[in-house]
Image (cartoon, rainbow, N blue to C red; front, side, top):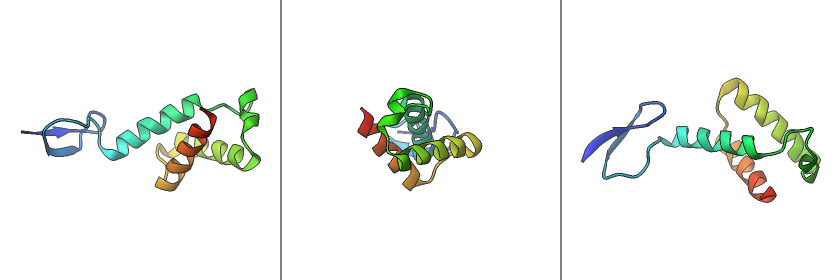
Length: 87
């Protein structure tokens, strides 16, 4: 067994037998980038499928993630729900 590190930030993942390549925070950020890249922008027609609160939330989350590079757990979960609802 070896002590592995996160592929993105280098934090120790501890002793393990294989599996995850990223720590939880980096995996969440990777998924956030994925969701935001695939979710519609405000000027795209599919954006209209979202209700007004979700459109406002999505705009706010895009701005915050661009500025801070992370979301709260609750924001991340809601973003995932929005992503799943449009799939």
